[in-house]
Image (tube, rainbow, N blue to C red; front, side, top):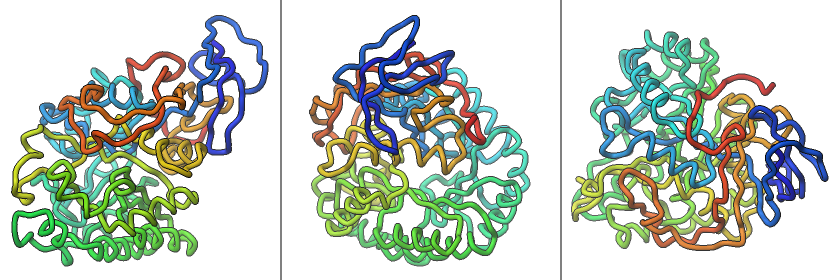
Amino acid sequence: MIIRGGTVVTARGVEKADIVVNRGHIAEVGRDLEGYGQVIDAAGLHVFPGGIDSHVHFNEPGRSEWETIADGSAALAAGGYTAFIDMPLNSLPVTTTVEAFDLKLASMRRSAKVDYGLWAGLVPGNTDQLAPLVARGAMGFKAFMCASGIDEFPPCSLDILREGMAKIAGLGSILLVHAESRASLTDPRGPGADDFLASRPPGAEIEAIGELISLARDTGCRTHVVHVSTVQGMTMIAEAQLRGVDVSGETCPHYLLYSENDLERLGGMGKCAPPFRSAGNRDDLRAMLAAGEVEMVVSDHSPSTLGLKQGDDFRAIWGGISGCQSTRRLLLAQDGLELRVVAAVTATRIAERFGIKDKGDIAPGFDADLWLVDLGSTDVVRRDDLLYRNRFSVHEGQKVRGRTVKTLVRGVDAGKGEPIRRGERS
């Protein structure tokens, strides 16, 4: 197959080029190439490497009324994604044992429309499971420094984190951490949005990231901070990297789009943890992204039923954002954000950081994971277009850019995912 005449976007830049695909891999990229078999005319379209969302909660098995693997992965494909890594919660059972891992893996094999990987969990009392889970294929581990919102997935103390990180380092794996310090969190004083915001101040994240950086330095554990909401937290991670600490971080579209001033208007749809921050923090985070100073942007797709997001009491509302279908198109609608940065933060850097083999780039030898998109199209997020099990999102009404023409997973239309391969590129 040859994809002819498109504008190819990679983390390196943008160029007009043809792409030859052979047996699911990219064989050649260049001008005026010869190809055999199927021809896809990409004139007028941009071709991005397939997106990789390393932070989704598809909740199956156990809470499939919130989201299913089939619906969630179909939504990803519609938004230009060709691979994802699923979090160890909010499914039941949580993925903290080999038995639970096997249950979720079987669900993935049945239902995933794009390629997939699984994070396992680090919780109190399961350090004996870490090595078997790595052997089983876990991409790494996730831990919480505060309550997760799910009783089945308790948080880790600093001592448990240290023990787990030492073992994870010895296994050559990686730990992802929800970084908010329990000591700096409080119970909301009342039911309102302002009460919720006050209960989870920016300092809780900043304090936890500092503690985590110290643990990463001491244990030598590769460490990744999920959904960083503060500019200071992101800056601390960058400074630690300069000191040789093996730590990284991600942010999410909702921290780039909304501020604490929006929460009352958005209501329960906008409740998440960490919460939205100040408008100034949001604007500075956008500036960091545009400058190439944010490593990756992921959805943290954490869906639920609509009823769990409604009500007047923020203490009772489920905290999570549904958004994985819209991430790339939301980013493309941001003024001043270069196309190569979108490719980098939604594909290339994710593959590099998490050791995903042969994905995240458009170059010979890589999987033919490709998003063909018409960037001349603009619209807004509409409920009727969403493919989630529960079709709603805080992003409804937000401007998006780009109409998906085709999403190819290993050279064919999305439909049957395979496990992500780990290791160095071929």
